[in-house]
Image: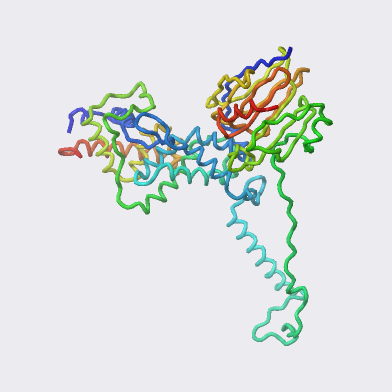
Length: 294
Length: 194
């Protein structure tokens, strides 16, 4: 036993405990090797992946005065209500309700029939469901066919020449946002899912800006911005935490896209238009894909 | 000639906005909340049940917390609310974890911790650290929890109360009592040596 610990008062013990905290072998949320290299996704990434892939569930329950009620409480209240209705009806002697002790009279027994009602064996009619449209939750504007893009916007279709992609699974236009055109591909073994469930890649194109325009991005401190070249043009690779995207058009209108957060993304301009790709392929593969656009 | 001038700014997004988005089902916003508090959450789980896989317990707790978000009281701090769910998950695991192992000191040659010591920090010799940790391990679970939350995790009294599910007055009295017991253990003949 060292003498110094024996002489500490409460304040001293508190300070000693605080100092001890830094010496404890705490586990971390981001598994790392001894030299600090990350070896696995952190807790936040794993939580997001679990939430994004599990079955959708209704999270809206019963409420009272805007406050959610527990399921057990709701069931208990319904049971009490049922009992109260029965008790009230019996007490008032309402017609149509009898409580009979012993054998029920023959008149209330169900009749036995050798025939089976045709409705009893009818299989339930399946409710027709339509396949979801890839990207429909992204609020990218109005859906159009690929061959309508040029006639609707005056912008020729330009897509990456990459056999992994094929034709986009859906196409959207939004004339209010600089004739924005968005091509969406669903996730596949070649296109890992982005932050949007089921979506593997989004390519957006909107009108370029003159020098007075600007783009702005509300980003978390965990978002990194890296200057890159895309086929000789300036661009940025944005990765890390999800971020918002908004900008001002050439005619001064503020365009906001706050409906969702964007994960890893590449943004670049070819001098006349600005492009943005959201992808989980990683920086180099996304840049290669972008450079193949023709 | 067209060009694009990009200007960027880092904006701290307040918890309240992230919570509102997460409640509306925005998983990415919830991920940002988790990332903000995952380190202290893992330590909380480890403090309460060092025998369990802390990050697994925390992952499970954060999933439960996401489903419980509709019951979160708007405007209140989310950190202790999350930590309480983490603490409950760790306690559940402690019941089936068997013998207590206690906290351990990191290896002498391990990389330094990221948390910087506060101004009141004192420098302790290796022997003192071992004695203090061993003395802490002799206390009852509830005493260890309250001292651990207050001084190892550096939570405020209010945060400790919510995390451990105790009235604030109980945190104050239990802290005082636990510190007294810790001093008694340290002062006992021969102390506690490992």
